[in-house]
Image (cartoon, rainbow, N blue to C red):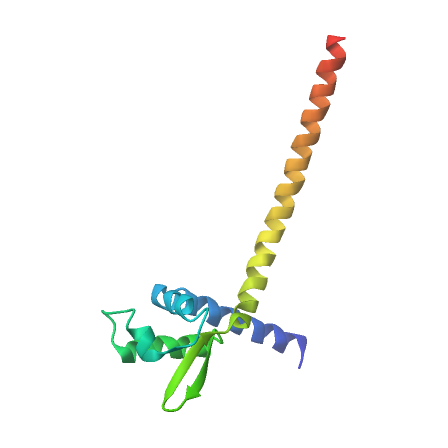
Length: 127
């Protein structure tokens, strides 16, 4: 696979993950299935104003974004968070923050160095 195709795949994964977690209901669903598998009915019980088919649609969006996995258990499907699905989003956010944090670190170190020099100058003048 070419690097352009890999970049396009990563961007598509990032876009899908960010779109999926943009919805507050889907973020709540991710929290519900973070620590243990849950059936659709169990998940839907946490949303009294949303129908079970609507919750299923939210789960479908999350699954298409690779943010949840589903496992058959008899006639029901159990959902659980697939943390690796957020990998592209984490990488993007890390890239954005690490650049800014690096610049902040340089600025803070520069300011600290300037303060030390100013203190040293004051001490020399006081002698």
